[in-house]
Image 1 (tube, rainbow, N blue to C red):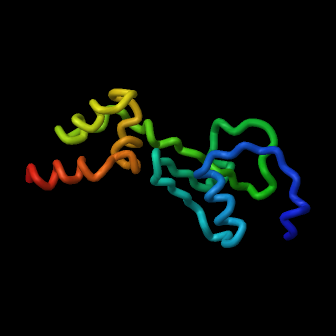
Image 2 (spheres, rainbow, N blue to C red):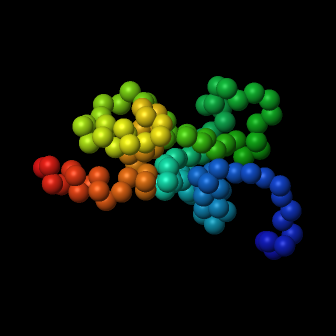
Image 3 (cartoon, rainbow, N blue to C red):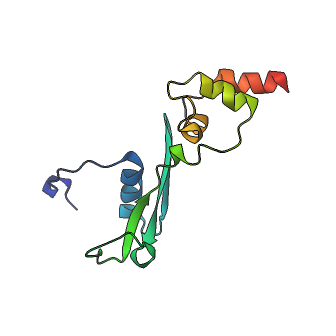
Length: 117
């Protein structure tokens, strides 16, 4: 495929773009995960198991599901170290999974765990 022939005006989430790009080269790729400033995952799913999907379905019979799991279950149990790290964020008590798994969690946090243990 010649890249010059592609004309598109699309805005795509980084995780979705990762999956789309990977599937371009290997159709067996089913999941993409981003661990960066934040964290997220997406996966491919059969459209017949997506109850919210209305209207025409893609001819492939599959769709990418973007989980936005950084805010998944803000009620997960936290350790004292997790709470300390969360207390230093601008969105206290929100997107805790994303904060704990992201690259914003620096080496000082790990050092605290190791020294206290």
